[in-house]
Amino acid sequence: MNFPLVVANRLRPFTMPIIVLGVMALIVTFFVVPVRTWVSQRDLLDSRSSQYGVYEEVNDALQDEVDALTAPEGVRQAIRSQLGYLLPNERRIPLLAQPEAPVTLPDRWPYNLVVGIVNLRETQNVGVEQGNLDTFNPLRP
Image (tube, rainbow, N blue to C red):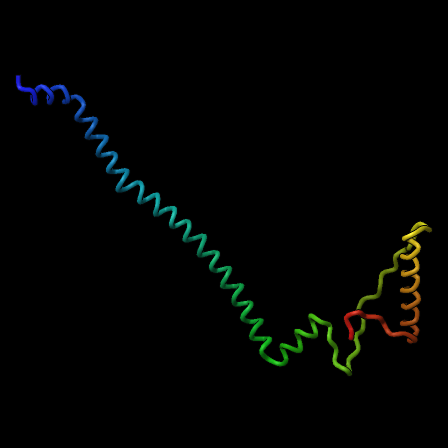
């Protein structure tokens, strides 16, 4: 008997499944894996593009602020809005009246200090309304 012929006859039933498995492995290697990688890269690119758009908006806003602060009028406006600076001929006028809130606190420490502060503020408001006092503003120099 011819040994290679015997081996070939014994392996004949297994050759077709081995070939099918080999073809499937090639299909997975050359088509499925690259497509999956392409899809994941596309999703990553979309998310990074949206992040980049947000960063661009933030950079544009900051650049607008820098451009405004390079002009003298922009610097003055920033000082007025952030630090509460007033020019010498200006006076700050409160726009809203302080709300009337009843003060009913216990008559013991530390509440008696709070009642004293509230009474002082009420006296100050009466003086401001009569024109005897100016409004205290800690932001005003």
